[in-house]
Length: 64
Image (cartoon, rainbow, N blue to C red):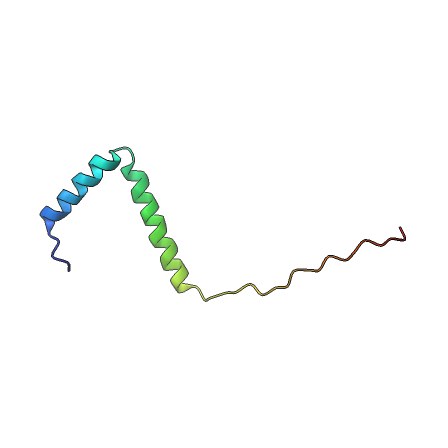
């Protein structure tokens, strides 16, 4: 694809491990997974635009 082979991927993963640490990697992976899932869901759903008008607030009745 971009000429990225196994050695390049290992170097990238080692750099990520050094920057974020081993404790944060599961959180980062989960966040990326949720983002991809939300993106896929958003591309499949029809576009919905909320055009429901907001009910106008009536002025208080001065006679009460």
